[in-house]
Image (tube, rainbow, N blue to C red; front, top):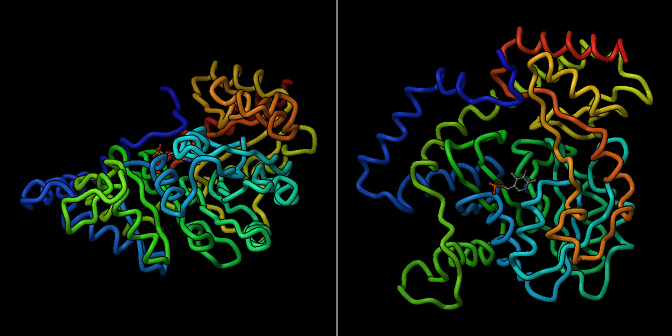
Length: 373
Ligand SMILES: *Cc1c(COP(=O)(O)O)cnc(C)c1O
Protein backbone atom coordinates (compact mmCIF):
# COMPACT_ATOMS: atom_id res chain seq x y z
CA UNK A 1 0.00 0.00 0.00
CA UNK A 2 1.41 3.34 -1.06
CA UNK A 3 1.71 5.98 1.63
CA UNK A 4 0.58 9.18 -0.03
CA UNK A 5 1.76 12.64 0.85
CA UNK A 6 -1.87 13.77 0.99
CA UNK A 7 -5.22 12.02 0.82
CA UNK A 8 -8.81 13.16 1.41
CA UNK A 9 -10.69 9.88 1.21
CA UNK A 10 -10.57 9.06 4.92
CA UNK A 11 -11.83 12.56 5.71
CA UNK A 12 -14.62 12.08 3.19
CA UNK A 13 -15.58 8.81 4.85
CA UNK A 14 -15.75 10.51 8.27
CA UNK A 15 -17.66 13.57 7.06
CA UNK A 16 -19.70 12.06 4.26
CA UNK A 17 -23.18 12.72 5.67
CA UNK A 18 -22.46 16.35 6.39
CA UNK A 19 -20.80 16.94 3.01
CA UNK A 20 -23.60 15.32 1.05
CA UNK A 21 -26.11 17.28 3.09
CA UNK A 22 -24.26 20.45 2.05
CA UNK A 23 -24.74 19.50 -1.61
CA UNK A 24 -28.42 18.74 -0.98
CA UNK A 25 -28.85 22.09 0.79
CA UNK A 26 -27.62 23.99 -2.26
CA UNK A 27 -29.38 21.88 -4.88
CA UNK A 28 -32.68 22.32 -3.03
CA UNK A 29 -32.21 26.01 -2.28
CA UNK A 30 -33.48 27.40 -5.58
CA UNK A 31 -30.36 29.53 -6.08
CA UNK A 32 -27.25 27.94 -7.54
CA UNK A 33 -24.99 30.98 -7.98
CA UNK A 34 -24.11 33.65 -5.39
CA UNK A 35 -26.82 32.49 -2.99
CA UNK A 36 -27.14 32.06 0.75
CA UNK A 37 -24.17 29.69 1.05
CA UNK A 38 -21.63 32.07 -0.50
CA UNK A 39 -23.01 34.96 1.57
CA UNK A 40 -23.02 32.80 4.71
CA UNK A 41 -19.49 31.55 4.18
CA UNK A 42 -18.22 35.07 3.50
CA UNK A 43 -19.73 36.36 6.74
CA UNK A 44 -18.40 33.42 8.76
CA UNK A 45 -14.89 33.48 7.26
CA UNK A 46 -14.61 37.26 7.76
CA UNK A 47 -15.93 36.84 11.32
CA UNK A 48 -13.38 34.18 12.14
CA UNK A 49 -10.70 36.74 11.25
CA UNK A 50 -12.37 39.56 13.13
CA UNK A 51 -12.81 41.49 9.87
CA UNK A 52 -15.93 42.92 8.25
CA UNK A 53 -15.32 41.78 4.69
CA UNK A 54 -14.74 38.58 2.77
CA UNK A 55 -15.36 38.07 -0.94
CA UNK A 56 -15.50 34.50 -2.24
CA UNK A 57 -13.79 33.88 -5.56
CA UNK A 58 -13.20 30.89 -7.80
CA UNK A 59 -9.67 29.93 -6.70
CA UNK A 60 -6.58 31.12 -4.84
CA UNK A 61 -4.74 32.34 -7.92
CA UNK A 62 -7.60 34.70 -8.74
CA UNK A 63 -7.83 35.68 -5.08
CA UNK A 64 -4.26 37.02 -5.39
CA UNK A 65 -4.93 38.62 -8.79
CA UNK A 66 -8.26 40.23 -7.89
CA UNK A 67 -6.85 41.26 -4.53
CA UNK A 68 -4.00 43.10 -6.24
CA UNK A 69 -6.33 44.64 -8.82
CA UNK A 70 -8.73 45.80 -6.11
CA UNK A 71 -5.81 47.43 -4.30
CA UNK A 72 -4.95 49.37 -7.46
CA UNK A 73 -1.97 47.33 -8.63
CA UNK A 74 -1.64 47.08 -12.41
CA UNK A 75 0.55 47.44 -15.50
CA UNK A 76 3.85 49.18 -14.87
CA UNK A 77 3.88 48.38 -11.15
CA UNK A 78 6.46 46.18 -9.46
CA UNK A 79 5.35 43.71 -6.82
CA UNK A 80 7.89 42.24 -4.41
CA UNK A 81 7.47 38.59 -3.47
CA UNK A 82 9.53 35.38 -3.22
CA UNK A 83 10.59 32.79 -5.77
CA UNK A 84 10.27 29.97 -3.23
CA UNK A 85 6.47 29.77 -3.56
CA UNK A 86 3.80 28.01 -5.55
CA UNK A 87 3.99 29.42 -9.08
CA UNK A 88 0.37 30.74 -8.87
CA UNK A 89 1.49 33.56 -6.57
CA UNK A 90 3.63 34.87 -9.41
CA UNK A 91 1.20 33.95 -12.19
CA UNK A 92 -1.36 36.16 -10.44
CA UNK A 93 1.03 39.11 -10.23
CA UNK A 94 1.73 38.68 -13.94
CA UNK A 95 -2.00 38.43 -14.69
CA UNK A 96 -2.68 41.99 -13.51
CA UNK A 97 0.13 43.24 -15.74
CA UNK A 98 2.53 43.95 -12.88
CA UNK A 99 6.17 42.84 -12.73
CA UNK A 100 7.16 40.35 -10.02
CA UNK A 101 10.40 41.15 -8.19
CA UNK A 102 11.88 38.38 -6.06
CA UNK A 103 13.75 38.58 -2.79
CA UNK A 104 15.57 35.59 -1.36
CA UNK A 105 14.33 33.50 1.57
CA UNK A 106 15.89 32.66 4.93
CA UNK A 107 18.01 29.57 5.56
CA UNK A 108 16.18 28.58 8.74
CA UNK A 109 12.47 28.84 7.90
CA UNK A 110 12.53 29.19 4.08
CA UNK A 111 10.32 32.32 4.26
CA UNK A 112 10.82 35.82 2.78
CA UNK A 113 14.10 37.32 4.02
CA UNK A 114 12.74 40.65 5.19
CA UNK A 115 16.28 42.06 5.60
CA UNK A 116 16.44 42.14 1.80
CA UNK A 117 13.13 43.96 1.26
CA UNK A 118 14.24 47.59 1.38
CA UNK A 119 16.96 47.01 -1.23
CA UNK A 120 14.35 45.61 -3.65
CA UNK A 121 12.17 48.73 -3.55
CA UNK A 122 12.32 51.00 -6.63
CA UNK A 123 10.31 53.99 -7.88
CA UNK A 124 7.90 51.55 -9.49
CA UNK A 125 7.29 49.30 -6.49
CA UNK A 126 3.63 49.32 -5.58
CA UNK A 127 3.04 46.27 -3.41
CA UNK A 128 4.55 43.47 -1.33
CA UNK A 129 3.07 39.96 -1.41
CA UNK A 130 4.44 38.05 1.58
CA UNK A 131 3.73 34.32 1.23
CA UNK A 132 3.02 32.52 4.52
CA UNK A 133 4.57 29.36 3.12
CA UNK A 134 4.11 25.81 4.45
CA UNK A 135 1.82 27.01 7.26
CA UNK A 136 3.68 29.73 9.12
CA UNK A 137 3.76 33.50 8.82
CA UNK A 138 6.43 35.67 7.30
CA UNK A 139 8.00 38.05 9.83
CA UNK A 140 5.34 40.69 9.23
CA UNK A 141 6.55 43.59 11.40
CA UNK A 142 9.50 44.40 9.09
CA UNK A 143 7.26 43.88 6.03
CA UNK A 144 4.77 46.42 7.35
CA UNK A 145 7.58 48.80 8.32
CA UNK A 146 9.08 48.78 4.81
CA UNK A 147 5.59 49.11 3.29
CA UNK A 148 4.81 52.15 5.45
CA UNK A 149 8.16 53.78 4.75
CA UNK A 150 7.70 53.50 0.96
CA UNK A 151 3.91 53.85 0.77
CA UNK A 152 3.38 50.30 -0.55
CA UNK A 153 0.30 48.15 -0.17
CA UNK A 154 0.53 44.62 1.30
CA UNK A 155 -1.45 41.62 0.09
CA UNK A 156 -0.84 38.49 2.18
CA UNK A 157 -0.81 35.18 0.30
CA UNK A 158 -2.49 32.95 2.88
CA UNK A 159 -3.10 29.97 0.59
CA UNK A 160 -1.02 27.75 2.92
CA UNK A 161 -1.71 29.39 6.25
CA UNK A 162 -5.39 29.22 7.28
CA UNK A 163 -5.47 29.84 11.02
CA UNK A 164 -1.71 30.44 11.43
CA UNK A 165 -0.73 33.16 13.90
CA UNK A 166 2.05 35.71 14.20
CA UNK A 167 2.53 37.17 17.69
CA UNK A 168 -1.15 36.53 18.34
CA UNK A 169 -2.34 38.04 15.05
CA UNK A 170 -4.07 35.73 12.57
CA UNK A 171 -2.64 35.29 9.06
CA UNK A 172 -4.66 37.48 6.72
CA UNK A 173 -5.39 40.30 9.17
CA UNK A 174 -2.09 42.17 8.88
CA UNK A 175 -2.00 43.48 5.30
CA UNK A 176 -4.43 45.67 3.35
CA UNK A 177 -6.04 42.45 2.13
CA UNK A 178 -5.29 38.72 2.10
CA UNK A 179 -5.82 35.98 -0.46
CA UNK A 180 -6.85 32.43 0.43
CA UNK A 181 -7.09 29.25 -1.62
CA UNK A 182 -9.46 26.41 -0.75
CA UNK A 183 -7.88 23.96 -3.19
CA UNK A 184 -8.61 20.49 -1.75
CA UNK A 185 -5.14 19.93 -0.25
CA UNK A 186 -5.12 23.20 1.70
CA UNK A 187 -5.64 23.44 5.46
CA UNK A 188 -9.23 24.47 4.72
CA UNK A 189 -9.99 22.63 1.50
CA UNK A 190 -13.10 22.47 -0.68
CA UNK A 191 -14.17 19.49 -2.79
CA UNK A 192 -13.07 21.32 -5.90
CA UNK A 193 -11.76 24.85 -6.42
CA UNK A 194 -12.39 27.91 -4.30
CA UNK A 195 -10.77 31.04 -2.96
CA UNK A 196 -11.47 34.22 -1.02
CA UNK A 197 -10.08 37.65 -0.24
CA UNK A 198 -10.52 39.20 3.19
CA UNK A 199 -10.06 42.86 4.06
CA UNK A 200 -11.14 45.48 6.58
CA UNK A 201 -11.78 48.03 3.83
CA UNK A 202 -15.32 48.55 2.56
CA UNK A 203 -13.90 50.13 -0.59
CA UNK A 204 -11.68 47.09 -1.36
CA UNK A 205 -14.64 44.81 -0.66
CA UNK A 206 -16.76 46.73 -3.16
CA UNK A 207 -14.02 46.62 -5.81
CA UNK A 208 -13.65 42.85 -5.32
CA UNK A 209 -17.39 42.22 -5.67
CA UNK A 210 -17.37 44.19 -8.92
CA UNK A 211 -14.23 42.46 -10.25
CA UNK A 212 -15.50 38.91 -9.65
CA UNK A 213 -18.82 39.74 -11.35
CA UNK A 214 -17.80 40.90 -14.85
CA UNK A 215 -17.12 44.38 -13.54
CA UNK A 216 -20.77 45.01 -12.64
CA UNK A 217 -21.94 46.67 -9.48
CA UNK A 218 -24.29 44.10 -7.96
CA UNK A 219 -27.47 46.10 -8.23
CA UNK A 220 -27.09 47.26 -11.82
CA UNK A 221 -26.62 45.23 -14.97
CA UNK A 222 -23.97 47.67 -16.15
CA UNK A 223 -20.22 47.24 -16.41
CA UNK A 224 -18.37 50.15 -14.86
CA UNK A 225 -14.86 48.85 -15.62
CA UNK A 226 -14.48 45.42 -17.24
CA UNK A 227 -13.83 42.73 -14.66
CA UNK A 228 -13.83 38.95 -14.63
CA UNK A 229 -16.07 36.01 -13.88
CA UNK A 230 -14.47 34.71 -10.70
CA UNK A 231 -17.31 33.72 -8.42
CA UNK A 232 -17.01 31.18 -5.62
CA UNK A 233 -19.26 28.24 -6.44
CA UNK A 234 -22.32 27.90 -4.22
CA UNK A 235 -21.81 24.16 -3.52
CA UNK A 236 -18.16 24.66 -2.57
CA UNK A 237 -19.19 27.57 -0.34
CA UNK A 238 -21.65 25.39 1.57
CA UNK A 239 -19.04 22.64 1.96
CA UNK A 240 -16.56 25.26 3.20
CA UNK A 241 -19.11 26.55 5.76
CA UNK A 242 -19.40 23.06 7.20
CA UNK A 243 -15.64 22.51 7.17
CA UNK A 244 -14.90 25.92 8.68
CA UNK A 245 -16.57 24.74 11.90
CA UNK A 246 -13.92 21.97 12.01
CA UNK A 247 -10.91 24.08 11.01
CA UNK A 248 -9.47 24.12 14.54
CA UNK A 249 -9.71 20.33 14.68
CA UNK A 250 -7.94 20.01 11.31
CA UNK A 251 -5.16 22.25 12.54
CA UNK A 252 -4.86 20.31 15.78
CA UNK A 253 -4.66 17.09 13.72
CA UNK A 254 -1.83 18.53 11.64
CA UNK A 255 0.01 19.63 14.76
CA UNK A 256 -0.37 16.15 16.22
CA UNK A 257 1.21 14.64 13.10
CA UNK A 258 4.01 17.24 13.23
CA UNK A 259 4.68 16.49 16.93
CA UNK A 260 4.98 12.78 16.18
CA UNK A 261 7.53 13.46 13.42
CA UNK A 262 9.45 15.84 15.68
CA UNK A 263 9.58 13.37 18.57
CA UNK A 264 10.56 10.45 16.38
CA UNK A 265 13.19 12.23 14.27
CA UNK A 266 14.66 14.80 16.66
CA UNK A 267 17.61 12.64 17.67
CA UNK A 268 18.80 12.14 14.07
CA UNK A 269 18.29 15.76 13.01
CA UNK A 270 21.79 17.21 12.93
CA UNK A 271 23.48 20.19 11.32
CA UNK A 272 24.46 19.35 7.78
CA UNK A 273 22.15 16.33 7.77
CA UNK A 274 18.40 16.06 8.23
CA UNK A 275 16.82 19.38 9.14
CA UNK A 276 13.30 19.44 10.60
CA UNK A 277 10.90 22.42 10.18
CA UNK A 278 11.68 25.35 12.46
CA UNK A 279 8.94 27.56 13.80
CA UNK A 280 9.83 31.24 14.07
CA UNK A 281 9.54 32.64 17.61
CA UNK A 282 6.06 34.16 17.95
CA UNK A 283 4.62 31.96 15.21
CA UNK A 284 1.89 29.33 15.54
CA UNK A 285 2.45 26.90 12.67
CA UNK A 286 -0.48 25.07 11.01
CA UNK A 287 1.70 22.62 9.04
CA UNK A 288 0.13 22.78 5.60
CA UNK A 289 3.29 20.94 4.61
CA UNK A 290 5.95 19.24 6.71
CA UNK A 291 9.08 20.28 4.85
CA UNK A 292 12.42 18.78 5.81
CA UNK A 293 15.83 19.34 4.30
CA UNK A 294 18.71 17.01 3.50
CA UNK A 295 21.82 17.67 1.37
CA UNK A 296 21.40 14.32 -0.41
CA UNK A 297 17.69 14.76 -1.00
CA UNK A 298 17.40 12.97 -4.34
CA UNK A 299 19.04 9.85 -2.98
CA UNK A 300 16.79 9.86 0.11
CA UNK A 301 13.69 10.28 -2.06
CA UNK A 302 14.70 7.44 -4.32
CA UNK A 303 15.16 5.12 -1.35
CA UNK A 304 11.84 6.13 0.22
CA UNK A 305 9.98 5.67 -3.06
CA UNK A 306 11.37 2.17 -3.16
CA UNK A 307 9.60 1.64 0.18
CA UNK A 308 6.29 2.71 -1.37
CA UNK A 309 6.24 6.19 0.13
CA UNK A 310 5.29 8.96 -2.28
CA UNK A 311 6.81 12.29 -1.42
CA UNK A 312 6.51 15.77 -2.88
CA UNK A 313 8.99 18.56 -3.25
CA UNK A 314 7.52 22.02 -2.72
CA UNK A 315 9.06 23.39 -4.79
CA UNK A 316 11.68 21.75 -7.00
CA UNK A 317 11.98 24.67 -9.46
CA UNK A 318 12.22 28.20 -8.08
CA UNK A 319 9.81 30.40 -10.02
CA UNK A 320 12.54 32.73 -11.34
CA UNK A 321 14.25 29.79 -13.09
CA UNK A 322 11.06 28.73 -14.93
CA UNK A 323 10.93 29.35 -18.64
CA UNK A 324 7.80 31.48 -18.31
CA UNK A 325 9.54 33.94 -16.00
CA UNK A 326 13.04 34.09 -17.47
CA UNK A 327 12.20 37.39 -19.14
CA UNK A 328 12.17 38.96 -15.68
CA UNK A 329 15.93 38.78 -15.84
CA UNK A 330 16.49 37.28 -12.39
CA UNK A 331 18.98 34.75 -13.63
CA UNK A 332 19.90 31.46 -12.06
CA UNK A 333 22.34 32.19 -9.27
CA UNK A 334 20.65 35.44 -8.22
CA UNK A 335 18.70 33.89 -5.32
CA UNK A 336 21.27 31.64 -3.71
CA UNK A 337 19.29 30.38 -0.71
CA UNK A 338 16.15 29.70 -2.75
CA UNK A 339 18.13 27.74 -5.32
CA UNK A 340 20.03 25.72 -2.73
CA UNK A 341 16.81 24.85 -0.90
CA UNK A 342 15.10 23.69 -4.07
CA UNK A 343 17.70 20.94 -4.36
CA UNK A 344 17.51 19.87 -0.70
CA UNK A 345 13.93 20.08 0.58
CA UNK A 346 11.15 17.51 0.51
CA UNK A 347 7.79 17.09 2.20
CA UNK A 348 6.78 14.19 4.44
CA UNK A 349 3.17 12.97 4.30
CA UNK A 350 0.97 15.45 6.18
CA UNK A 351 -2.78 15.62 6.60
CA UNK A 352 -4.97 15.51 9.72
CA UNK A 353 -6.30 11.99 9.16
CA UNK A 354 -2.89 10.45 8.31
CA UNK A 355 -3.10 7.03 10.03
CA UNK A 356 -0.45 6.52 12.71
CA UNK A 357 0.74 3.23 11.25
CA UNK A 358 1.34 4.94 7.89
CA UNK A 359 3.27 7.69 9.62
CA UNK A 360 5.30 5.12 11.57
CA UNK A 361 6.23 3.44 8.29
CA UNK A 362 7.51 6.80 6.98
CA UNK A 363 9.48 7.45 10.18
CA UNK A 364 11.06 3.99 10.29
CA UNK A 365 11.90 4.07 6.60
CA UNK A 366 13.48 7.50 6.84
CA UNK A 367 15.59 6.48 9.85
CA UNK A 368 16.70 3.35 8.06
CA UNK A 369 17.60 5.20 4.85
CA UNK A 370 19.52 7.94 6.65
CA UNK A 371 21.43 5.45 8.80
CA UNK A 372 22.76 3.81 5.64
CA UNK A 373 23.87 6.98 3.86
C1 LIG B 1 -2.33 26.92 -3.72
C2 LIG B 1 -1.64 28.21 -3.77
C3 LIG B 1 -2.09 29.26 -4.60
C4 LIG B 1 -3.13 29.08 -5.66
O1 LIG B 1 -4.35 28.61 -5.25
P1 LIG B 1 -5.32 27.87 -6.29
O2 LIG B 1 -6.60 27.77 -5.53
O3 LIG B 1 -4.72 26.56 -6.62
O4 LIG B 1 -5.46 28.76 -7.49
C5 LIG B 1 -1.47 30.49 -4.48
N1 LIG B 1 -0.45 30.69 -3.63
C6 LIG B 1 0.02 29.71 -2.85
C7 LIG B 1 1.15 30.00 -1.91
C8 LIG B 1 -0.53 28.43 -2.91
O5 LIG B 1 -0.05 27.45 -2.13
